[in-house]
Image (tube, rainbow, N blue to C red):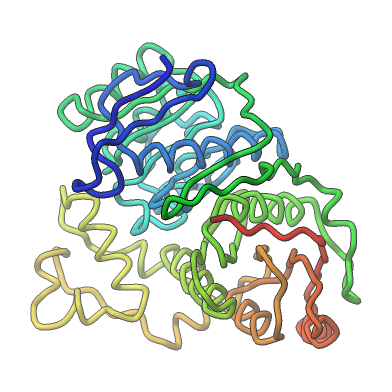
Length: 390
């Protein structure tokens, strides 16, 4: 297949629309559904991300993509019982690949609503069963177990998009695109991100454990496929907050940090004990949880609104309780796609438990940023590697 006709482009008025190869065959096969223009942008970016995570860590990887940036990405580390509850995976048999997707989706369940999924390995049945009840647009993987494919085909009344990609496909070294009738050309970003990029430690504290190295690699590879400016927080083999597409780096850091705080607060005993109505739709559950822990609890607890979510009115999670809970976490990793120009980024990151940082360096204020890191007892690596993606 040299081309695939799309219903429309980014918007319904943008027709005609297609994906095609100037030479050779498309490296994908549509097994079910009819993916659209944005779906394929998400699919092809997400596939590159999970392929590189697999290569860097040796673990199965998954990503949850929305509007050409990852909502979450992860590798297949096992889930403890708390995360099983938070990720809606209680009582399920989880393969390493299923654990990777549970983590990727669970990174930011609000942003993952209607996601495009990418898997580094052929989709197995445990992963398909985990995906089945979620609101999702489609999936790309290098293959599908027969029973997994049947489970996925049943989604969205049979219209769920399922795409297989040739894992041996290698694109041309030069990539092109057009904007306003003008053609752009550049070499593909083929840089391999591995532990060698974390060797230049510039802080007094140089204790970088293996778990932090893994998480920094996850953050950096995620940033490689995130719309810039971007900052990524990672922990326990997954992203926990992605700040994408901001004009200011401090806004990236704040956005990603707020998401990381929500990820931690969803594991608070009060959040785990919320008396949700039985059979509450997953998106409604996720919205209520997000409002409850993020400072908007009045929207689910006030004026009798709780009756639409809970069997009884729960007690609010106070500001003091939130701060006490968040203050116990000090092992979060952070990656930045370009240098930090000011130490305020590190100060904000520290409030969300960041201890380990990887950033390119190269600012005229590097000395001040390093000094801030030392004051906060952080470990910071200068990678020398900018990861802008547009």
